[in-house]
Image (cartoon, rainbow, N blue to C red; front, side, top):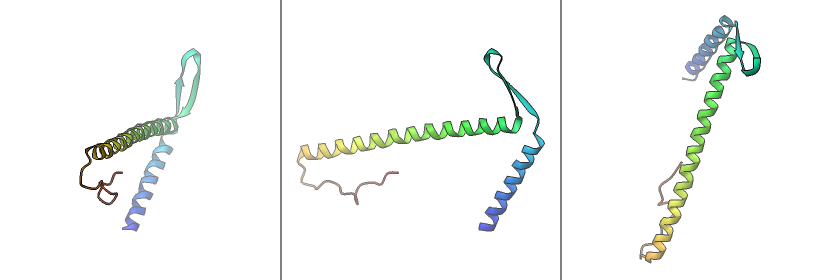
Length: 101
């Protein structure tokens, strides 16, 4: 199975490398106030893809942090509610609590 994965990786690398070699034409990026950059098309595509991936990871990470804060807040509320009720059952231990990611 490892050999198949490495073969797929090499195949993907050579396909992307061939794509980069075939698209070496210059693209003009025009900015406000007359600014202009000329870059290879492949570089423009790579930067756009990387910026999108970084933005997606950042959005996912922010959502994950928000969910973790909410879970810990709800756990604290649960512990307070159990204490205030004075229930006979002992509070949930780590072994009994559901596992979070």
